[in-house]
Structures are given as structure tokens and as C-alpha cells.
Amino acid sequence: MSVTTPLSDHACIVVGGGVIGLSIAWELALRGVRSLVLERGRLGRGTSWAGAGILPPANFQTALDPLDRLRGLSHALHREWAERIRRETGIDTGYRACGGIYLARGAGEAASLQGLAQYWREYEIRCEPLDAESLGRREPALADALRRAVLRSAWWVPDEVQIRPPDHLRGLAAAAAQAGVEFREQTPVERLVREGSRVVGVETAQGPITADTVILAGGVWASALNASVHVARDLIPVRGQVVLYRAAPGLLHSVINEGHRYLVPRDDGHIYTGSNEEEVGLDERTTPEVIASLREWAETLVPELRRGEVERTWSGLRPGTIDGFPYLGRAPDFENLYVATGHFRSGLHLSCGTAVVIADLVTGRTPAVNLDAFRPAR
Ligand SMILES: Cc1cc2nc3c(=O)[nH]c(=O)nc-3n(C[C@H](O)[C@H](O)[C@H](O)COP(=O)(O)OP(=O)(O)OC[C@H]3O[C@@H](n4cnc5c(N)ncnc54)[C@H](O)[C@@H]3O)c2cc1C
Image 1 (cartoon, rainbow, N blue to C red):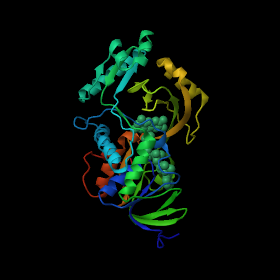
Image 2: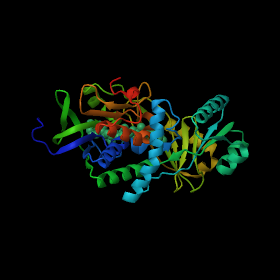
Image 3: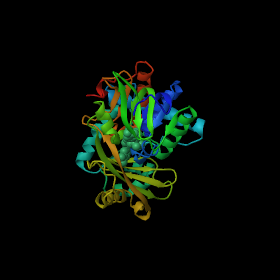
Image 4: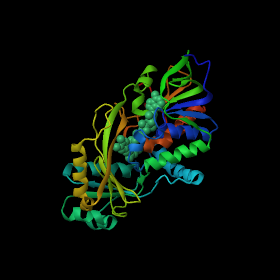
């Protein structure tokens, strides 16, 4: 099909309605660039929906590494975005400056936590070690684990924050719609339409749509589309499984981290428990073994959870990359095609900063973060 009979013309098409695509579309709209978000399924129901929403502390002022700078930029923006979404749409995104506790059980875990604490201090991120008494005061539900000597060391990190992804996504979509963003769900983009060094639109199952600029933000499912323009070719889906408990509100107060596993308490008593890492392609099923091991971990740490109900389990596919950096920037063979994907375990956290730097590129500004390390065709 040709693009001479467009469904509609847009300044910008964003492929993918996850946290990355929605954030970019909103930021662009606030700068006066009209976009259409094309989503093959339902908005905000991909990996972003499945995530925990932990925003670990970060400091833009002191960060040197480009990924840390992007994290620092995002961390500061999240508070502003949550306030703005609430003001403009009335939606509470679940942004809570609840702080985080980091725990170690074995000697190896304690040593790596000590290293992490050194990193926090170097970058002027507030942290303090907790003795048994102060941990018990902050989180009475963990006091028993200390008495039973399950834990070896603990740190308190006051600037850790959480958002609740389904609410954050709903808020983003509503704010973006108010700012003029249009959405089309159940509209997979099958192909990009190219004229020389420009993308002039996309081909969808419902027909062609033209645009001045196209942004690829399709997460793990967009590999074929990415590969067709030689960008973000090595995305690796990394499955993470989740157990959602319903417990008494107030059982825990902060995000509790131990290695790659964590408990995230929500206001209403739900406790999000994650996670693991598995490379199983695009298989989104949960497995009894992993769910059992997550439960065993959580219930040893907080025995009260044995009395809570497991309300639901699910899994999500993180968009991993070989070097751990996302792909952000302009596709090298094109004047007007941009890529924002591969955020692995941090896409919810990095979404605001990603939106700002991509909008900077689209509108001809120099981003505050040097994007060389994130080149989409590396
Ligand atoms: C268990 C788990 C816990 C996590 N916890 C955290 C956390 O605490 N903090 C954090 O920062 N991150 C976390 N993450 C990671 C985070 O969820 C991801 O990095 C982020 O959601 C990626 O967002 P995305 O928009 O790129 O992908 P997605 O949310 O998957 O969005 C991409 C969208 O593009 C659509 N799409 C794809 N191809 C096409 C096409 N051709 N046409 C139209 N639409 C298309 C898809 O349907 C999808 O809706 C977690 C992930 C998991 C799995």
C-alpha cells in the first residue's frame, strides 16, 4: 500500500503505548508537537504494567556515568510529573517517597551491600546503616528476622520512591490526552514507510498513516520492526515473575530490597513481591517453582505474610540489552526516526528522563545527558 491515502497526518507517530511511548508523547505535546500513539494491544498493558515501580535514589548533580545521569534526571522529574498528573487529571500515580531498606543475609550479600553503600556515599545519596533496634523501629515486621539472625546487615535509603505502575500509566495517558495526544489501540505497526533518508509514515493493519517524525518505543515486541531499520537489534526479553499478597495495610512501610528481590507495600495493604531473571523468549507464563521460591523468600523474611492471601501472580518481560544500556537517539540512516527502548529493569524509573532527552532531539535542543553511549545502532 502507498502512503498517498493517509488515515490522518501527524507531526509525530509514537510506536508503542508503554511507559516510554506515553511519556514521550506527553512531553512532546507539552512542547507543542502533536503525536499519535499506535499500540498493537491495549495502552499500558505491556511490560510497564507488570513492573514494581521502584525508583531507587539517584543524584543528577554528582553522577558521572551517562546511565546514572539519566537516572538522576528522571528521579527529580518523577516528583514533578506525579504532581502535575494529579493536578491536571486528579489521578494519584502512587508516587510515595517511602524510602528503601536494603538487607543482606549472607557474608557475600553483606559485602556487596557495603560496596553499594560506598557508591551511594560517593555520589552524595543519603544512606545510613541500621542496627537491630532502628530496623525494628522502622519496620516492626522485620524485627523477628533479626532476632532469628536471618539478617546480617541493613541500610536505610530515605530517597527511594515508589510509583504504582497501572495508576501511573493511567495518569500518563489521561494527561497526554488532555494535552492533545491521540491514541489508537489494537493497531500494530507492521512496517515503516521510507523515502530516501526519511520515514514518511507507517503501515498498519488498518492502513497507512503519515507523519513528519516516527519514534520507536515498542519494548520487547518490536524486535522485527527495529531490525528492519538496523537499530536496537539485540533486545533480550528477560522474564520476571511476581507474587501479589493482600495483607493488612501498614504491615510494611518502605520498599524492602534484598539482592534482586524486593517487597513493595502499597497503601491498601497489597504487597508486590518480585522478582527473578529468566531468558525464555516471549513466554509470559509463571512457573510454580519460581512462585514458590519467591513466597518462601518473602514469608521467611516477613512471617506475617503466611497469613496474607496471595491475590495474584504474573510475569513481565524486561527489554534487556547486551551492555545494559538502553537505546536512545536518532536512527543513523534517517533524518526523522528516533528510538527509545531497551530499558531493562529501569524503564519505569528512566521514563521521564527518556521522554525529555528524546523530545530535546526531536525539537532540536541539546539534551542535558550525553547520549553517545546509548546509540541505537551500536
Ligand atoms: C517483574 C518486573 C519488575 C520491574 N520493576 C521495575 C521497577 O521497579 N522499576 C523500573 O524502573 N522498572 C521496572 N521494570 C522494568 C520496566 O517495567 C520496563 O523497563 C519498562 O516497562 C519498559 O517500558 P516500554 O514502554 O519500553 O515497554 P512496554 O511497556 O512493553 O511498552 C511497549 C508497547 O509497545 C507495543 N508494541 C510493540 N510493538 C508494536 C508495534 N509493532 N506496533 C504497535 N505497538 C507495538 C507493545 O504492545 C507495548 O504495549 C520491571 C519489569 C518487570 C518485568
